[in-house]
Length: 371
Image 1 (spheres, helix red, strand yellow):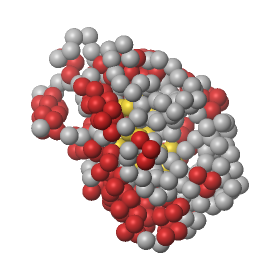
Image 2 (image 1 turned 30 degrees about the vertical axis):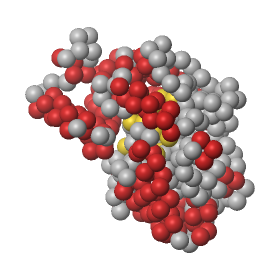
Image 3 (image 1 turned 90 degrees about the vertical axis):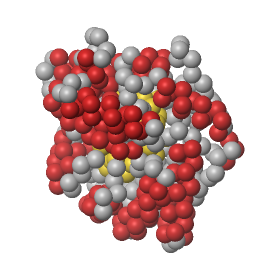
């Protein structure tokens, strides 16, 4: 019923040539469109009106939230998730504050990288490395379906998975060491990533390929700072992305904060128009949503700062700006990000038509997938 009402409202406003501006005094079309481009993390296992994320959703109209099980800034094991009943109520309460249904996302890859754990009462699935080493595609499909079913029942509609980085460096601290890659064979990565996505899709959960254009060869951690893969990266790392895009399985692609002078001599992938617009959009033909990796990671925030990072990412072609708000916590970060986007438009650095491009992509997937 919620999906029917949402789609009906969207088409009424579209066909009448109006936006929600006419329904909410003082709210411009830019306010609504810019808000949809921001996804933010927050603190709290339950919501009340005083939680800063409520004003991010209700007043700044952010388009999405991302949930975590641990609070990195506090070095705490409590953040957003403690158990099934608590989680269902939290995601429901989050949606209750949103005029436009939220993307509610989580990193649930399987193995080490999971936010919903067995200790909390959730089913667990093998890591990508375990699935790839098994050689069993049906096992990978079941992992995707189990994950999708669990997430759907908890009120999520998006999983930041699968990782389709090729395992080119066995000493990679953020991919290989955490068993996040299916294989060192690009075709094996594409096959296993594809059936995992099939499993997610069978339960109505959006997938997200990460981390474009390939993080598997890195020696450093882009959470901590500048990460250069110029000498280690191979063009074969693009194959899983191109294959899954060609097969129509890629809903979203997450960019990596890695620098590769062979692709762009000036900017890391997340901020590179050559990588995002030139390679991913034009050459590889991706028409879905492009989401940044966490904009608070030092490879971006430490090198470019808040507003400049936003400007460069959107200029490059990103549709959703992700702020985990976990490495460093800042209340009302979503409101701050939306304000920065609108200020960049007012300054003439970004155009309203550019914002509309991302808004239209986001709304296409929300209409199709959120109910």
